[in-house]
Image (cartoon, rainbow, N blue to C red; front, side, top):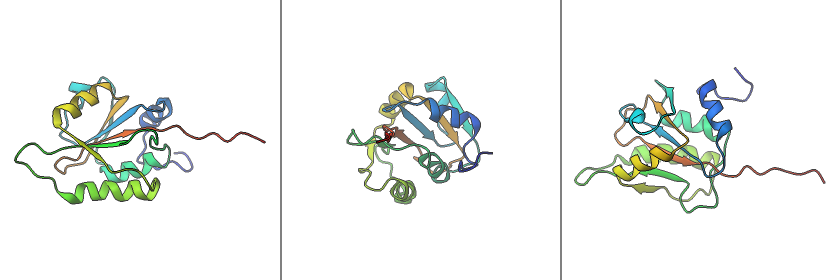
Length: 147
């Protein structure tokens, strides 16, 4: 355990976050997501729901302020619907950690899969809600310089 690091952040996930550069993307996937089919770097976070994981992650990294949408979610398939509470629960954490983050961009399922192929890693969570997947784009961490 480390002081100030939420226990939902495993050593493997901490390593991924440390190695990510600005603009790199991290997929937080629900328990049903085919993560291993789309990315060779999969981190397990079984039993952990995405809002709790988001809170731990966003205490350690910021979101990209140079893009119009640093947070992406999967759009529902034609004829399907989203439970608005899912995105609300994600948004509440993001607004608490990084207020002013632009609205989420919803992308079509297969576009989400293509984005997953290029992501730094996929975190397989214990999330069981329908369309419980989110992509975070890491920002540039400001470095203060001594005067």
